[in-house]
Length: 232
Image (cartoon, rainbow, N blue to C red; front, side, top):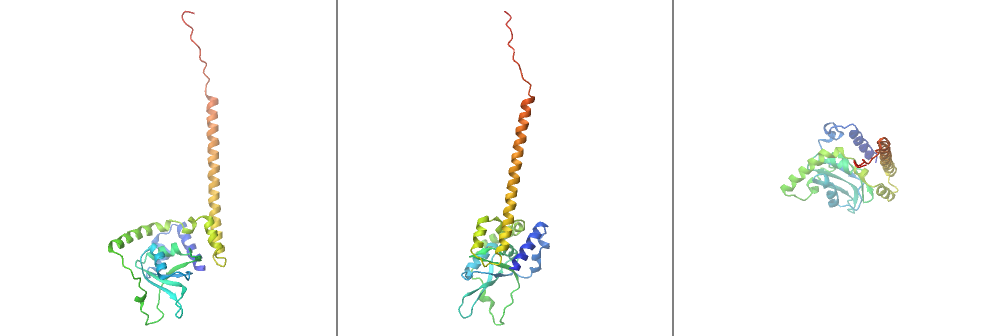
């Protein structure tokens, strides 16, 4: 969980300092298109993981760690993207989110097979898109890559109650206190901005009313006299 905090702190610092992509900490991993995924729900299948991570690019390889005897998921995996830049998006947007009640860790990785006789093609993602769909995905990816650094983390956009509900469902989660504090800070900042805006609107309304009253006081009074008829 310390890795999640470190990544969030790095991203926050880069956003505050407007660090360009060329100087980002992500550039240390330009040589690898792999990401490590930890904290996965044991109920998630390879297909579920591919669907989730396809939001930020096209996965071409996935290895979900499974028990050799039972075949059950161990809750962590390695995934490779077709485009290396997709790893930046996945790390920034999916690291720290809650999926099926568990907070997921996503980080850059350099995968090394354990056994020399391991056939890596066994873990290739077995689907092929039409060429026109690939072109569309690449255009979408470029748009996402340009804008993702300037937007806040997805968690900050979720309602305060939703975050608390998720944390209540995972009392043993070591990230619970941290996320609760962060969300509380964001909630307090929003309330503070709303109060300042309300006070400002009230002051503007009072100034407008005083200005209108002053205009009424300074306006000269006109006495209308009837002209006497020439016959009077």
